[in-house]
Each structure stands twice: as C-alpha cells, then as structure tokens.
Image (cartoon, rainbow, N blue to C red):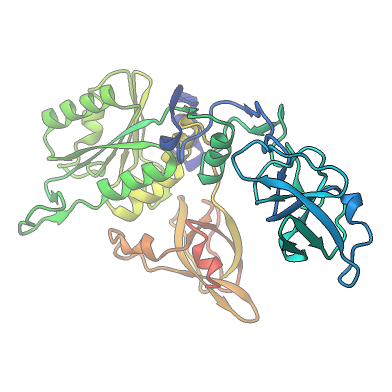
Length: 413
C-alpha cells in the first residue's frame, strides 16, 4: 500500500476515540486529560483581601497626604490572615493588616507599610491612597459561574492548582489506553541480563514503551519472545485480552525467521489489513485487526520502528487518551545537500538542523547506512518528507522539517 492507503486502511478498522472516563485523586491526575468542563462554584478569592502589608483605611481620609504634610489616623485594631476581621474602620481610623487578610468593614483601600510610621495606637500616613488601592477584590482571580477549565485540557501543575483552589479533591479524566509492547527475535536479550555472544540488547521495547508514555498511553511490557509460532501466538492472544492495542517489533521482513505476519493471520478476523507499506524506512510494517483491536508489527530496526510508531501509532493513542492528534511542529530550512528518495516510496529523511548566517536554518541529512543504529534518531531534530513522485531535493532547496522536539531551536542551534 501507499502511505495514504495505509492510513485509510487503519482508519477504516479503528475509529479512534476516548476509551472512557474515571474519577481519580487530584494528586494522581498530572498529565491526564480532563473529561468535563469545570465551572467555578465560588469566587477566588472568596473575599476582598489585602495585596500588601500595611493599613486598611478609608481612602478619603488619606486625600492630600504627602511626605511633608502627612495624615494622622487612629489604629482601630489588627486583621490577620485566616481570620474574620473583628474590627471596623470608621472616619479617621486605620486597621493594621497583613497580605492576604480580609478587608475589614468600612475600609476601601490599603496603604503600604513603607508609606507609614507607627507610634503606639496612631499611624502617620505619608501618601494618599486611591479607592481599591492594594485590594484584590473577591472573584478577581476566578469569578463564580465562569468556565475556568475545558474538557480536553491536559492537566499540569497550573490546572491542578486551579482545581485545588476550587476545593476539588478529585478530577474526572479520560481513561489511559493500555498498550502491550513486545519484541521478537532470537538475537534479542533483555537489558540487565548477561549479553551472550551474537546477541544484542532489546532497544525497541524500551524506546517504544517510552513513546507510548509520551503519547498519553500506559505501556504494558511483555518481554522478548523467540521466533516460535506457538509461543508468539499465545503471547499475542494474552496481549489482546489485557490491552487496548498491541505493538510488536521485529520479525516482519521476508526471511524464514520472520513469522509475525503468519502468527497475526491466525489470531482472528479480520486479521491482517496491510502487510508492507511503500515508505522508507518502515517498508515491512504490518497491521492486523482482531476483535476491534489493532496490532502494529513494526520493523526491528530502531530507527524504522520509532519512525513508523510516530507516523501511524502515536496519533491513535493520543485520541484514545482524550488528547488531540498533534501534528509535528514544522520549520522551514534549506537542504545542505542533494536528497534522494527511494523510488516509488514515500521517504522520510532524518536531518539535523544548524544555523548558518545569513541563510538561516540548514537541514543536514544524517547518514542512514546503519539504519539499525538508535543514534540516528537520537541525533535527529526531525525529518524531511519526500513524496513518491519527487526525483530528488537539490542542495540549497527549501524544505519543510517536521520536528521531533523543539529544544534544539530554543537553544539557538
């Protein structure tokens, strides 16, 4: 299939949508997606409060006060934070007040302590105060009845702070999709174990599990499985029961040991919906649908596996977790050298960006002769997508780079 045909085939099998809603403790809701609009049930702050340390006064009693012509007021009492005022302010009076304390009855301004001088039960004011000066009014931060957070927002420290300010101890959020992740291949060894001769450590299960987390899902790591038809079939059946989607890597090429497509065809209807996509890298990618759940079998090469995950799997997990399917941030750059696509295939060329004056951003292809090297993606800032009908991109030609991350640009790379 072409790249676009593969996208349509996947969408035809799974209309991605949030999996459900659950209510969880507020302290566990970080990085979860809000499943309802939040309307303020009270004003924040719920009362007029002082924004400074000083004296609550009637503004008109301070009119005309200057450094060489101060106003003398009688101190009627003290207002502390967390207490209802036990004093009132009448003509010619002032109440000592601290930041955050409620404004006492009769007062309509607060004079900063720096503009006063205290002597016993009298305070000298050296500057006039305007009405409402240094007072945070009730509802100035959040107004009762206002929709303050919206369904679909990702909850971070600020949003959770808002919920706490409204007195909420729990949050209604979308359920997190469980994504089973497993690796296949006789050459794979799990990290932490001794590495036998001829073996390599499992890169993909860990990088793909992290990619699942970054997409809003919860990875369920099932381990490494040999190229054994019965064992792999049992593992995939367990994965389908315990998760909402399955992601495998390895075993999808055309060699005699690549048994994943054969195994997928035995799991149930409709079975394999695509086997092979006209893209580079990632050509062997195979996708099956079993009882309404998708199984993505990605290539064993780490670069190919992570890129195909980014292209096909990540958007689905985002939607299933209640997020919006985000498109990569794009920047304009100039090709540092001629780029050749694979004939007849949508080609994705990994590039590193650098600033070059006066031209601007330069996109430099990262050598992919060793396509299995995880460092290809580690070094890449993004990729350039080349359509099937384009013969080449010439050196100096403008290109669009889809970013993996923005840190390099923020650092002025």
